Image (cartoon, rainbow, N blue to C red; front, side, top):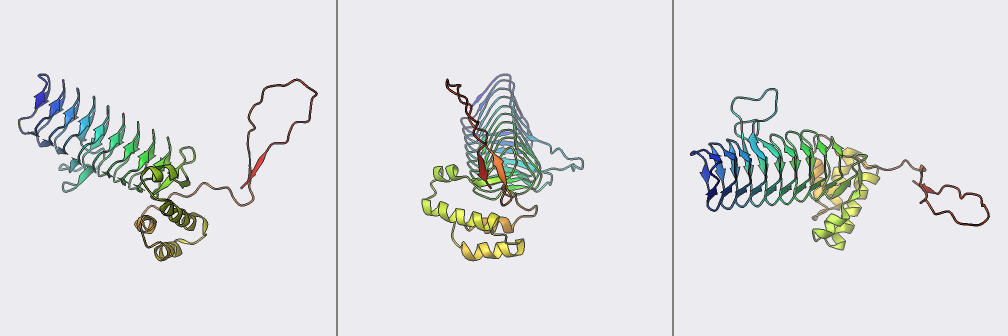
Length: 290
């Protein structure tokens, strides 16, 4: 164990083996730090926090702060962080509101600079949460989801497994698993095909996911019809996850960005260098059918 002389570590904290605590870091009482954790300088671990093994926390991270809530009770919950996470500079993770509850971060996540994880959030495993992401209270982020920079997510929303959320998206409804959210419109623009292939999904898996996606977004089934139809047609994973996820939604789910039937959009032609020769009539703008 290596604790810098300027660090302040409560004697009531439980510190594992091979832990490194850098200059000017603070570890309060009622804290558990697992074996092999590394805290760089100016890291603060507040009371009510448990860190598993081999987590790496960088400068300025504050873990275990009280929830930002106007009706915060006197006795609040905990923060539980798993194994092998990298928590970058100035990340904040807050304790749960209820005394018996916890804000949970799973295993092998990367949480980048300035991200905020509010009270009662539940982060799965192998997620990537990029710079300045803002997670309000009671949000669930499932395994292998990817949240790009400056994404803001409304309280009680859920982000499904392997979903990809584009930068600066503002999310107010659940995001189904396996889909991509466009940052500009904050709407679904298809499956996260690249992420699925990188995760080892087979071609047949992806084909079935596409079929389920079309049923959800392009079949015109009403809500009462959609879930039974998905359950009947897609009985095996991974496509079966759609019905399970959507059936548990309390906020509704994010819709697709599609043009109305028959609509057209203009495509801006690429600029071309001027060439010598007689003047010709300009080509009409190209159009793409919706």
